[in-house]
Figure 1 (cartoon, rainbow over the protein chains, first blue to last red):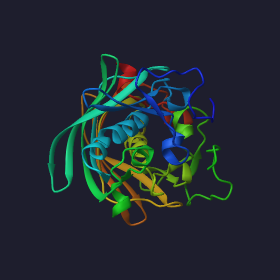
Figure 2 (tube, each protein chain N blue to C red):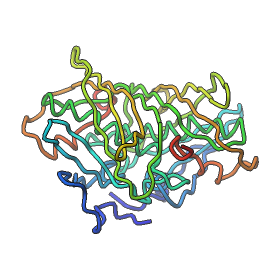
Figure 3 (cartoon, rainbow over the protein chains, first blue to last red):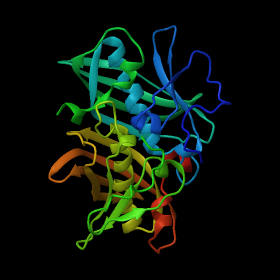
Figure 4 (cartoon, chains in turn green, cyan):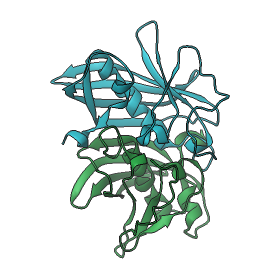
Length: 163
Length: 163
């Protein structure tokens, strides 16, 4: 395996996806990750399964899929509301696995918002195959600069950071 | 940050903890992890929060805490039953955060077993402070060599691997 988690030179992500050029922390360690703003308003994040994402069976590790889910499902709060947010609860149902080189995408839709707590339904998939479904609860914690950009993507944190 | 995720030379884990010397895949990438078999029969896994585990606030990233939970909460199946297992569902409630250098531990207790599906209640903590509580459902998929060892720890996989 390689320690260099920057984008493989050979990887050309699907159309519309751009590299999240995180250069520190867990986001860098488990990267590279990509994001896309779809014409219909959806936002997704994705990664290509590499050896450093693998479990002993050379599938994407469950921890990696949950990490993507956390980031991608919660991102809707950054989009709908210019606010930093923390994860309150995440429920993940594992349905299928991803193999080396698979392009794994994740996104969510908001079911409700009450008192700054968003409840979303999320999904992680490869092509037509669903890998994971679940629910997320995310809490807004502080306003952020409304201009969307890398900082907004990189600044998410978990509940404890605000506790 | 360092790409070398082997144990920091300065880190002497608490008594009874041994390094999980994983040398590939996601387990290595997000390591180093440690494990301990307690005198009362409990088993825990743990890590020391380093920069490559951090979110933008320099707390342990939620994805890292869930990854530890997945590994540590499911390990009870390896102990109670000499079997490989997959994660079916994981529910994580985030209560508090972990800072750089914190020693984060995780463990679980079995609530039920039916038709090879174990339901466990799990916790992740730093000292007296609970970071996360949750539930896990794990399914046994194939017998493994009964001798406990590194292979048993390293061979866990997620649901999709067996699908």
